[in-house]
Length: 315
Image (cartoon, rainbow, N blue to C red; front, side, top):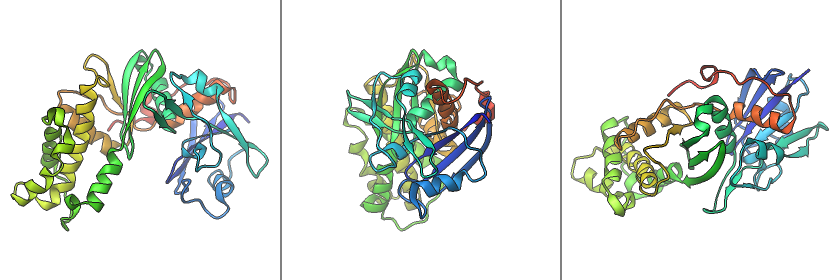
């Protein structure tokens, strides 16, 4: 039987994709078995559990499973890098069942320095789904550690990590800005006010506007329940302000979101305040990226890439 088992193995979750021999996605499974919360039996038990009943196919994993704290540390591949180079740089380990698991190495930008694991596979999947973006595009991947990645001529040329999600969580949980004691609400106006504050902060940047969160609340302008949305807008707006200020984002070059629908919607709303109209996001490209890398590595024969609508609902 021909096909592939792809594994998107992160810090907090594990997803498995089963492909047939033509590259069609047959089944997807998810478990809360990231590298920090494995079941009894560790990595081998997690692998066996999530692939129960599936045939013995080649296995390829991306993400934190190949990190220093993962199953086996894979060295990063320095930029510039494309799908061919990543496919040739795969590593592998022998699982308890006697068969190999192949690992994607991740990327390193030596000019940052900066690193990514897992996002590179999403990027390659997005390029396979939207080949017109391969010539020139900046991809935005929101999350705990947001990535802004420049692609030129099909290769990743540079990227930057912004700790937006982690900073948001820290401010809410461990700072005076989050100590309101109020239940949160979905306040679009507060979010846009925060994004606009970042936009208008100029050279000072949004860090100089953080305490305005408390001042606005004490003045009665910002309801305590709306503080999280204001902070979210301020931090996401800062991503766009800095990206435009230093040329990471350019108005003459496409910008493309990859990510979860609700979070992508926030980025699109913030972008509009900077007079940027972002197209609908690619919701999940990791599976396509894993198949593409497997073909480059010779683990499976080349197969067709499904249309965008099959795997990437817009947000």
